[in-house]
Length: 120
Image (cartoon, rainbow, N blue to C red; front, top):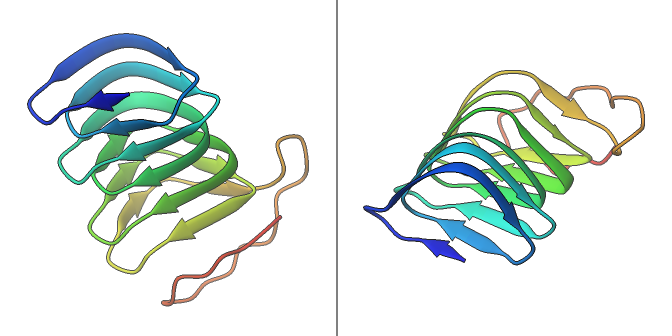
């Protein structure tokens, strides 16, 4: 599924295939696959998926079963929860980060300027 730039969608989305969002979404997104928030996207929603890559803007909590990657130039205002979280230098992140298996304890946080892949 692709939400093109200039397209606006509101409500609850339930997806089973990979999705690329380049437009505006409001509400909630749930996917059993991957979601890519493109550089022109503005997502004002709670996001839950197998994996999430953010290149644009997300306002809302993101939860992933496998991984979350917030790339350089992206903006996230919300909490991140996944076993693997990568926040590139140059990304704007405001919130809390919890790295843990879906039902496990949180891993200790590491501070560094370089992007790192951490696993719980």
